[in-house]
Length: 458
Image (cartoon, rainbow, N blue to C red; front, side):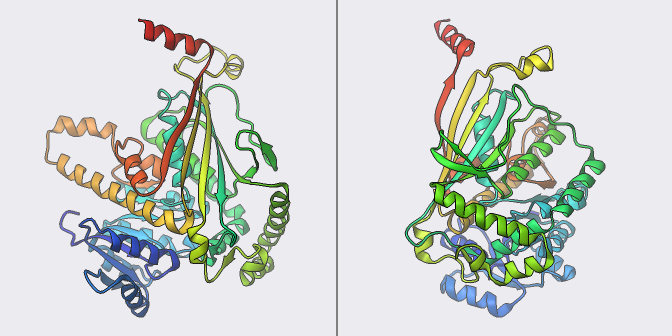
């Protein structure tokens, strides 16, 4: 890819989120050669007008449904950032065009069915052609996926047993706001759960990934509303892509490395009051019931504000809503300080935890402020890792063999933690982009604490 004239193409740059990604890159290009692309020249010209008058990116026109046109423009670039959704309708052709043209690909998808289908249909060919396809590189689901990796790094390898995350949103008097496309993706996702299940079964049959194992006690995942003393908020199972993405990362890492022990994971969202909990229950029940029917989905899509209490609209969030919204994601983990497992499974399930970790990932408004900066930060990381690969390709053969064991995959379909598992710079890059990773507390217990004291004495 070293001969390509463009580093990054932002495809779908005229969309609500695509515009924000383009503005973020225009504000801080860092020497990157880039272009914007989409199906309408007029809309791309409007994006240029919003950006400014100097050092504007090139514009490239190609319809997302026309594979030949996509291949032609993608052959000019090293990396495509796809901001066009819903991905279940518009994503596959862009992934395919990237693979055939030899360009790496990243998106901001939070659609498990699309991501699983992409893995099923494109992983082998992308791997064979050394093309990286990275999904969920935004709020869905970098805080959760990379947050779990951040927590795992507080333990020895294979010693983190369980992780639970709790997402909390804070907003001003104007409340939360979201764009229609995000809502549209959710409606179709909930309406097609059967396809997701079948796709996962096909992935299992085709790849026969190794069975993931876990240490210690089994994590009991809650399926209803509950009050959690640790966050002092009402919590409920998070209906987004986080759990699916974390499992995908663990599956990919197990397939890559042969390491079978990965943490159990439970993802929750929270509200601050009993009244908010009741509202969520009512709106969620109506949404889920209607999404299961074709006529119900049409109704949901026709009246987004009605069925979300005014949160989602075609206009998207207002500047005031964006300014006063932020998020925190708390992580509570338990695990061990040695890899020694008990002789029997029953003994292992009763083994007492030796270390607890409390961590937090936080940032500004997640969907439209944090997302562009995080998306671009991971794009920077990918481009830098690719450049290191190019430099290694002309270095000592023994060094190349060592790097095969550690480093970014050369090709295939992945989620963020699987792609950047060995990176020494990714967390620093994400922090600079506005995503804060913090360890709040590490508690060592019983024999583990005694061992640590003994080590200090010696």
